[in-house]
Image 1 (cartoon, helix red, strand yellow):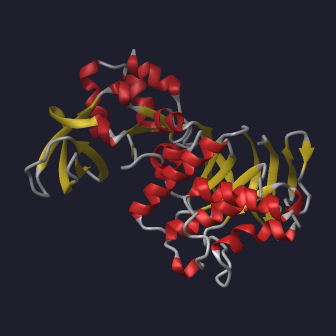
Image 2 (cartoon, one colour):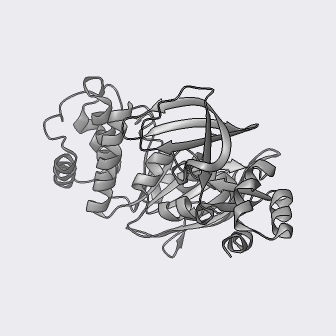
Image 3 (tube, rainbow, N blue to C red):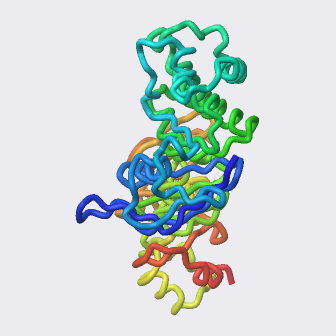
Length: 355
């Protein structure tokens, strides 16, 4: 197990900078998730750590050793690719042991590591099969097995579950997390799926446009988003980010708030509220229903306050039709306030709202 330090890392392709001055640490034995949409720089970051690309600036340290320009084979890092990178003409055994044979590890040591990996991954009965004879989940386990027998200091995983169906993705994310915790592997995991990030990570790095938007635990990103972007990206359904026009501000009138503060909020702020914190309220703000989705344990309602769309959930089935009129409200303590220009969280205004 190792600790990784990334310092002021940047990457450019010609005149195009795809990664700008990112810094973070990955604690020993933890699972760190790089999260963000396509093109945000998360896979580029992973490839720089693996040594598959050279950074334009910055450094990468593993424990006390700089590995920034070390060739991939000498970094002690294993990587599991999105397409598993299995050799179709080789058996499970041959795929798992391929790297060890290339490194000329003794045969008895190869067999010892193989037996252990096959046991923890449930592959003992599949060792003679070819990749074409395996399910998606089994192929994923073989790719993990190759990383385990390599006994790497760090395991990198690039969108490893994206090719699997929804049910298998859920099973595999539980399996990967359980395995990582059981073996104490230091793992850096790339995904665009915030559900994977929230359920698996010790720490999440949310990225946007080649920069780090926020670093924190899943709970920190959900409960105290640093920016409006972070608030809207994390959560299913996403946080509502609202422009505080007169309709929205009317929800605060009963609190007899300072007019100067209300004017500041209207001109300089955005209001964030999560769908589960909005409820039907006979004294609330008038809204028009767009769609109703009954999900069993809850109902998801998409509505509109004038030209602003809003999502909210209710534990009860709503017996109304699209186009129907409702009134909704929310508690001030559940709001998030962001600066309208920078998008950054503004707790000073939030605390004034509470007073």
